[in-house]
Figure 1 (tube, rainbow, N blue to C red):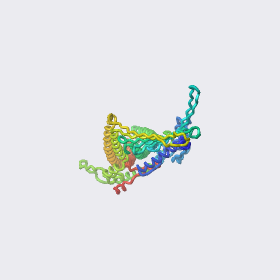
Figure 2 (figure 1 turned 30 degrees about the vertical axis):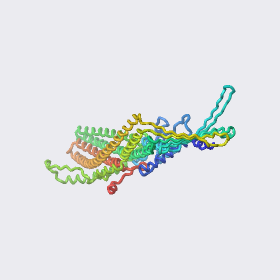
Figure 3 (figure 1 turned 45 degrees about the horizontal axis):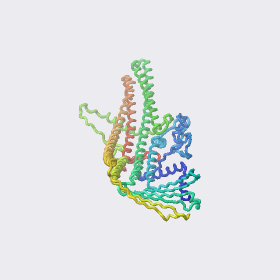
Figure 4 (figure 1 turned 90 degrees about the vertical axis):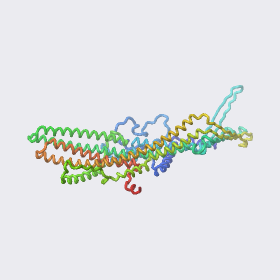
Length: 606
């Protein structure tokens, strides 16, 4: 029993112990491959805590759910035969410190939204699980080259009723170890034991112990470390690829969160502007009715003012519904229930609005300066001034430098080039399969066959054989080899196509930055002009030199100009983030926050 004891003990682990071991192995592999892939490490948790914000909102705000599955796996009702395990574990979410006040909306800032999304988004969680799964797949490939132990016992009772009834009992045990060496040799050693004889030591003259060993070595086809370890090599690289994929996903996900967050605030800003416009329309309609009652305004002008009040109400209601729809979509995006009562922090829009106001201030100075000058004649030569980089933002970097940075840093391009090397290796493996097969097989068997009652393995039986498989029928292997060359060509074309896509995207995003900046300037100028038009129209209407429809038109133009300015500010900001994302120079912290790069430092380094 001393031979089988450790193996039996190792085979009596609980499901929970197996799970913990798998987690430990996967975590070690992920940390190792993160260091190789990115030079940094961070945990990749695949178990969701029980106190994530989604669940706490459902419970605190008493939101309806279809079943306990909406709350988490720890709330599921146990089913028959469920393994005794401590799954899921008691874990706490980093967003558990976000307080939820009863009967109040939860206020969420941009930083909050990024952190909430990292811990609550189902898609984000699935991508982490993809990394975990591929790490376990690598462990399985590594296991092929470890020593594999197996053990068991057989108990047999046989009764012979021919003639005198005889009942015999056989109890045997076995232990085996096998290992595949990276050079190609497959080793196996097994020990068989007659347990009755071994334990009683006296019931029989021999102990009933035998040992079998065997070795199999490929000499032609399938020989060589590079062939034997190819599945392991690919599994090692697959983990790196998945980590690169996850890193790019995190950047795209974070930029998407910021973009959608700002879009919600844009809708909120539109709602506030439409609300102010509606209030103004109500006040104008009231004033028009009073002037109409006094005979100072024609009935048609009064009707126009009332009509504008109705249009203002329609715009206000429409803006509110668009804001609510966009907010619901954003809640789902970050992993929260659509009916959760939350509101975004409008203060996050203020830095961008301040940037827009700077443009408005600059345009006001230009407007005043232009008003003091004499306008050129209509038939004077027209010189079109193209946009310049004189007032360009920090991320409007040189196109050649941007493309160079993208080609150096894009993780998906590294993966595409890695796939070319993978395809080259597959050609080698496929070519090897076309060769003749020659395998050396040898074995040795020892048994305790003497009758002295003591362990004795002096004798043995040895065999050696060569197996030859001539390459006569290789249709499948031939086609596999040809397809491997096709796959290599396809992999190289993928690199070329991705390079072109990257260059196109970078050039387009730099143009978007320039266009958005010019749009900012134009929108700011439109605000200045529309604001002055409203002021002048109000004065002229009061003086009786203007019809009310002209004032109403200028007010509509001012509203549109303000909305366009906000849209231009947000578009420019998101274009900055998208460029950093597609350069693969935007970092995401462990908490899910953005860490932007400094273009000035990159220019200096280059």
